[in-house]
Image (cartoon, rainbow, N blue to C red; front, side):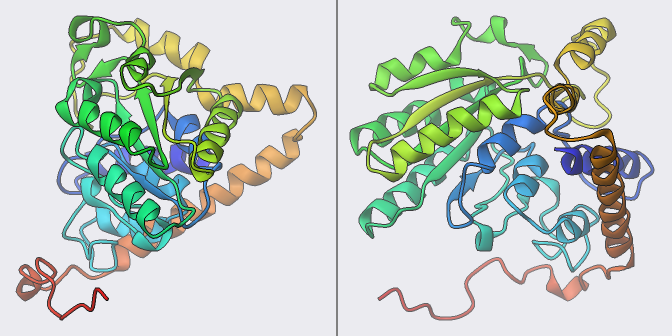
Length: 313
């Protein structure tokens, strides 16, 4: 969680300094959801992400050097510097990609789950999505098909209260997205998305259900988007007091540290060691990105199509 937080903080800084091109959507405040879910997965399991995908990517085990280089538009990035923030993917760890299309990950996850079922595998496909995406047609298509075919899928709604600039209550007639699972005879549960232990417990149960052929689950993680919809968002749709209050009472890092210190799971010294290690990793990632070359102009049209024959047998 700390690695994601510090990664996002430095990305915010470098973007505002003009070092990072394109658009950037930060995951600050939602770290416990990605970490709690991905901690319940194996490397071979699949995830699909959103336009706010850095946290999911890092939590699934991606190389932060390559993540940072991609944001910088450098050749050493995951997409060779040509995809940017919203298109990071690492098939080697089951990360099927961030997605600039709201609701774009649903049917990719269902497709991965179907492929697993057809080859009689044990992998599970997890789809991260926001509360706004639950109003898109792909949400209903995906949950319906996953339930009808009893697919090994888990749907994670990151209800961060804001769909771009629209509050949940103005666009969604139900308070809890999880209630929609009943329309597809799908088990659903609500958890505190800022409590990594609670998220992990719910995700573990859902993943085991899916892995053992018991079908999909919908998990709604109640969380909050601390930063604006994108870096540079003027945030005229909400008050600063609201954000500061959420930072005070719902910061997943604070909740984690209070719990582990109170229960003697970690010491202050151990937390300091983690902080220092993360600082070193982030500094190394920035250095790697800044020292990496840009892709050559003649590479602009490479990697758009499959350039070699593939044997699907």
